[in-house]
Length: 282
Image (cartoon, rainbow, N blue to C red; front, side, top):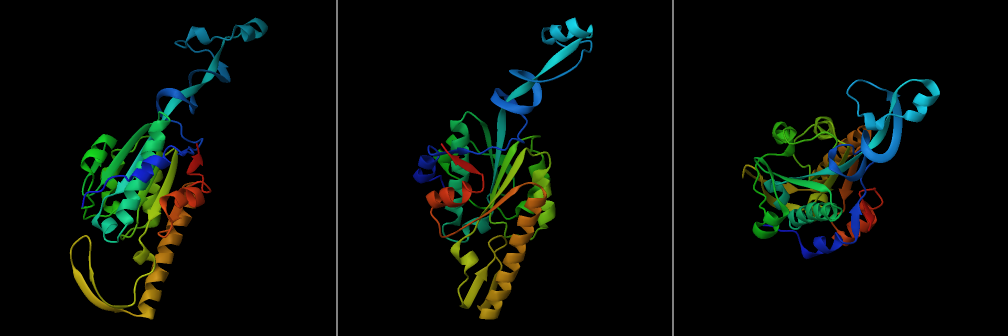
């Protein structure tokens, strides 16, 4: 089924802006201050003059005192690049409400970024990695049809990563993967990195009883009885996966938000994304 950002996600973009890390350093020329040197009016440092330097930046006061040529360095002005990656695999649509939550979060980030004049690039990851423009998403919607998890798509994802970008990854992360390799791949060269995990209620609280499970990726089926011990084993594995992702994000200076499946989008913004430094009130 084709999904589009809800009206609520669009409305919330007027109430919040992105809390960009000061580590975001690269992007197109613009109004925000980066970590490099450029031609803004904010003085940053001096260094010895080298042939080819802009003579307009020569510090004549220092020359008058010392007889040596120095150039003044100014802080770079940039428009930060925002990269939003959405897991478009079939597992995201296997549980009611999860796909809509994912696309709403991505839409909220995209709209909040563009409202501030930021360069936002949204990538849809199914069995390809393709950039999805907001106008196209609103008009045509997007489908969760991918058969591969993010870990299998990392080689293709690496081709679109740009140095210094603020990266958001929206997924359930319920696929075989090494948390260390996954986080480090997305963190490579990033100005900042935020993992937003979206789970459905049954992902967190599976029902007891006889069930027929169908693999969302390959269509395979499995009949089993979910007993208390089976559910306990599943929760232990889910907790271990959560802990692995959270710990590796901490090591890499990234943010891992394990979003509640019970909260409304409004509540998620106020109770989880703002306290974790992902959003700030506008």
